[in-house]
Amino acid sequence: MITTDILIIGAGPTGLFAVFEAGLLKLKCHLIDALPQPGGQCAEIYPKKPIYDIPGFPEILAGELVDNLMEQIQPFQPGFTLGERADTIEKLADGSFVVTTNKGTKHHAPVVAIAGGLGSFEPRKPILENLKKYEENGVTYIIRDPEVYRGKKVLIAGGGDSALDWTIFLADVAEEVTLVHRRNEFRGALDSVEKVQELKNLGKIRLITPAEVVALEGESKLEAVLVRKNGNDEEHLSIEVDTFIPLFGLSPKLGPIADWGLEIEKNAIKVDNTLDYQTNIPGIYAIGDVNTYPGKLKLILCGFHEATLMCQSAYQRIHPDKKYIMKYTTVGGVEGFDGSKKEAPKAVIKAIN
Image 1: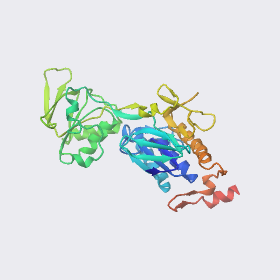
Image 2: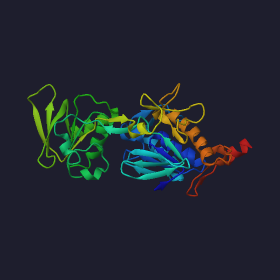
Image 3: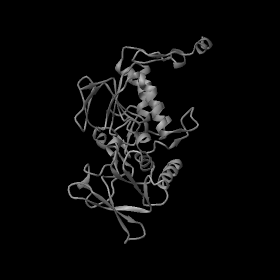
Image 4: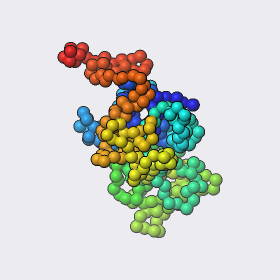
């Protein structure tokens, strides 16, 4: 069983920043996320989408923000259970919790912080008659290891950032990459659209628009994909493939957390925002887009604020006999669990003193 001080469900920006704030309080964190890598939507859906409302950054790409947060929390050595969904929760006699994932991994902590964004994500699947037959046998929805596709023939369907980014990346990995989108226009970042067009012009990928996948073919495994050019029901292309990757986005669902006895309002968890963002169950908090309260704004910077207050409350819950005196990082620096320390500049200390 994995034991920690604060168990964070959701490894998006808010969950990651909570690790930093907890680390300043000498509290250890472990994060659970159904996605195969940290970062939530920022990493999975729009890593190259610019964000303009992060303090101190006039503009930062979502993927860069995740990278920066991962670097910021590195001294506090958080643990991760990735590719698994938080499934059940049990409250023990001492008030602590055991959270078990859909794969049976158990986690024990006195405090649980739900930072699941809009919830757990499930892939939006195309409506194809025999889709289930080929799932995990030629059809996949999330790329976990790009090397799996080295030397293979891959067809990607979609028009957002994920479809564009993976088309660009796999162009140098796979033997053949085809991108199919039902419109001529794409929803992704302009530089990604331009790169895809450039790869097409260089003959490194095949781009078929406007078109859609209408059938999958193969005996025991996927062997070919049938593509119909939109506006022409008679024009069909049979493309030989090893893998079909539909990237139509992820559908957010609160998932099993909805059955944990928490107060839910419109697919969000109600919290007390007058103090610490605690739910109706003492010891369970909800921060970021997953929560709701009067005046709630679904912004990353608001999630950062909520994470900060949550950690202060969690410290008092874990150490009821101790009084924490807050020190500014400009004075005390940042001391990691690995013994590393970023000292506050002496000029700043002198000025404050």
